[in-house]
Image 1 (cartoon, protein in one colour):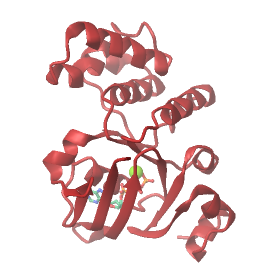
Image 2 (cartoon, protein in one colour):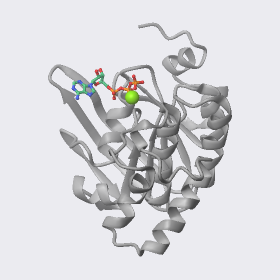
Image 3 (cartoon, protein in one colour):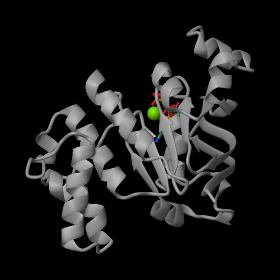
Length: 238
Ligand SMILES: Nc1ncnc2c1ncn2[C@@H]1O[C@H](COP(=O)(O)OP(=O)(O)OP(=O)(O)O)[C@@H](O)[C@H]1O
Ligand SMILES: [Mg+2]
């Protein structure tokens, strides 16, 4: 049985901005769900709520049909931010932090860190100061940090936006390799060809509402809503 996460009528406003307006969605493990939408559509806000970093104004989250509050969902989810945040320590400490607080034995941590760095092609970076590494390297360190935590809900906010094409391809493959029935992968991207390549399902958000949620092929070949059709064709006006 695969895990599942249900969002029920999630709403979130910031002062006079309705960032999310009644989002309902059901996500299954074993799939990559890509969030598409123009700047300010609500993708990051939705992922922050799924990560338990932000409380929705109203609505519910259910994991495997059990209601989960912010604290509970934080235990299940890991979000890789649009702009990665590094601690002022070396790369090893940055990567091992989550495992250390879970009291994973030292030897195991060392092995997992090395594996994760290998996946993002940064082997040997353990002793480097994380904050001094390049933007793209920091993005890959943040991804490695999320990968080794093996979360049930892996949330990736534009994970390849800062990467060179070769690194982007490597990371794309690593994300696909993380697919598992006990993991839901949600990713925001502005790269439509990337979305087409790796998404199982597309959720198109516009002005804080879901305008279309469909299998990837159906979304790109035959978008049902006018907004999605325009978005796919690059004709969406503001
Ligand atoms: N903390 C905040 N305070 C005020 N407004 C916010 C805050 N966070 C988000 N917003 C607003 O909510 C809306 C949705 O923002 P969000 O970051 O979710 O968009 P996005 O789809 O991730 O966009 P992008 O593609 O640019 O990353 C925007 O209008 C944004 O300005
Ligand atoms: Mg965003």
